[in-house]
Image (cartoon, rainbow, N blue to C red; front, top):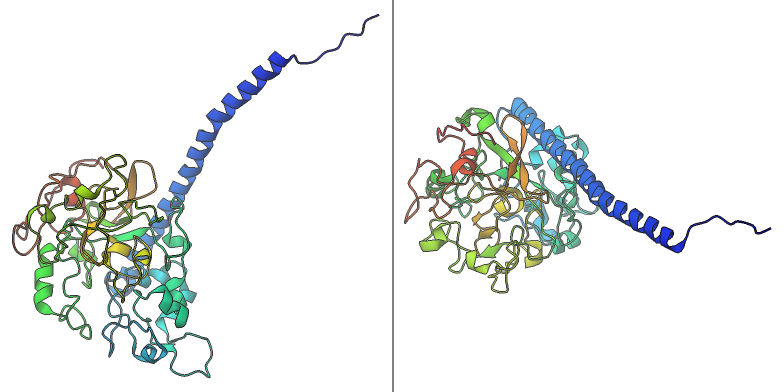
Amino acid sequence: MKRLRTGFTLVELLVVIAIIGVLVGLLLPAVQAAREAARRMSCSNNFKQIGLAVHNYHSAYKQLPMQGGGTTGSSATGLAQTAADIPRATNAFENSYLVGLLPFIEQQALWEQISNPYDSDQNSATTGDVFQAMGPTPRRRLQDHSGQPYDPWVTELPGFRCPSDPGMGLPAAARTNYAACMGDSALYVHGGVNGNNNVPPPANHSRDMQRKRISDRGFYGFRRKSKFRDILDGLSNTIMAGEIATDLGDRDNRTHPAVHDSGLMSHGWTGAQGTNNACQGQIDTTRPQFWSNSLVDITFNASIGPNVEVRRGYKWAFGRLLFTGFNTTVPPNKPYCGGSLGISDAVASASSRHQGGVHVLMGDGAVKFITDSIEAGDQNSFHVGWRGPALKAGTQSPFGLWGSLGTRAMKETIDTEF
């Protein structure tokens, strides 16, 4: 008798393999989407914790944490590049709003290191290497930390990072994805910086501070003390902070600062340099999210560091716009266009690695997702400033709903769901 054998034919096996391949192909995008949804939720939760920390800070100190706060003393710059500089080095009013939040986000140990004198080599027998309380300026270069380390400024905190952003490690000092909202104008954002750094604001260079007030319309202002009572448009109608993507070294025009052709002057622009279109000609037309070969790169500056260190979100403790700030001039995920030093004034919108938009933190602590297509008014308009073709003080935001959300006291009525 012939014995019957059961099994798969070659055709049947190929069909099964094909079906499994199709199912895997359908499943992988769903898995990736689920993972991104989880990362996005975690990102939102981190932002909510920052919002809660700001409110707790205000309850404790009756004011908001300062963007551009800290201490000062005999050293105007506080670079602390050598051991001889350390005893007199200060942060020169350059700390970001995130520094003051540390005790309110369960980072008391790091706050103790910052708020007390810090021995750079942890050897009490060595003299002359102890940083003052509140530390040196957070603009320090990596080479400065290599010679005389100040660990708090190079300590990356998970609570200041969005899990959707893959950026990590050098050449960043310590990254963040959560930036302060500086209003709807790119003009004179850092006004008064070149005044007497040994005098606390607002006495610091009073003329520049007066000019700065015209365009200083955001929830935060550089070296400006403020309280919740100053948010006249209402906390629920004003953006406190927003997401920024950190640089990956790929010439992404949201994270790699570019300089417009004439160089940015903080007191006013002329022609296209006074609008959001100042760097338009440098964008790669085939890949609109990247710079083309015509990129006008920032200028090397010895006090700031090599260009590769001057990138979006690279220093969470540094209160300049590039690292921990943004404005509501252009819609989310648009190019970063500014001055020759990188830390100069700039058109600097919110950005993220999420699909289609960014998270923003409102003044009342609510976290909302803003799409890239939010109504942003006249993108060819000049900005509010103090001279030249700039718009006059008190002008309603020319940048529509997005611009209105970035101003704190312009009496704009927001009747659109966002």
